[in-house]
Image (cartoon, rainbow, N blue to C red):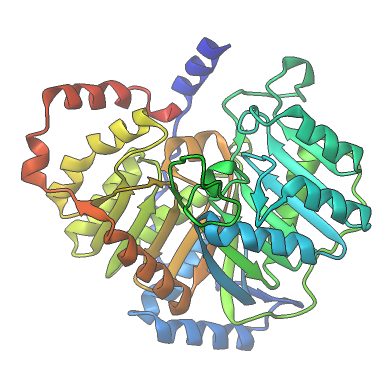
Length: 450
């Protein structure tokens, strides 16, 4: 089976995003609110506010229209966005969202474990909420959660929690078309259809590693994982609910009861787009969106990538941006839970540095965060890595936030992370040992799988 998976992966081809996406589109930007699509006048007012925050108003409007064409999902205004850093902030927010839910809880995670926060386990909390009458539905990946003890799932199921395993590794449980490479890499929590948490943080004990973090075990040494999530309240949460339902039906989950499908009204003034990528349906929407953002950048591209295994087009677009004067900065891991991915990452340094891209490696943690800011006015946070696997095999979910406030916060966090990082110097890098270069070359052959 492993050999078959390798063969199939070798045949997979990353799509080429057409150069026509750089042209000025004719379609108007679609903006929705809590009551549906806004009028032309209302949309113009929102765009004017966003344009006032951008370094180039025309470029921003052009980019948003291009993005709409490739993302195929609307922008939603009226949202409140909060950045959550690491398990220290994300786990308390997750547990609070679950505790506060009155009608429904939807969880979709690549890694789904019985984590704890402030002395309370996830299983205890979910069982208590189910006994209180809250509908709880869970999708977890069959490979990502393969090490989770069966007793955890049994306890939840016995309490009435509905569970769906995405693409089970057991052939007897396969549902129609199946590939062991096709994984549900999404990480999202939805409470009452009004509040969501989305990003790179799994429901995994690895995020209990930060010293002093909620649920950390001070007696057991762990590697600290650096990551980023967004907490979102507002109309755009309905888009996440739709993505959850699509997976639930695709995986033949049991019938669902009535759940909240839309927030009661605006919660803030942030403009957000949700992008759900599903390679099985040839919907590499995040990939096209990110390329569009980089191609249309005018002043700055700041990226944090836990796994930097770029496709040819991703790498070339970063190089082109740097050569036309854009401040391209990459914050990447200095060590990783995937040493092959780290080797491939480093194999690209020379080309990037020669083009003027600034590369930094973060020390003293495993960097897992996936964030990108462009021109201080456009940001994306989600589950997608900057690699071919997220394009070819993984179902992902990412949130695009348009506006200066969130971008400024992410840029500030980026700069704080740089205080724990070291720059890569081109001259010194070229003198690295031959053995390291050979290792990098070897793993480049397998980069689609990493």
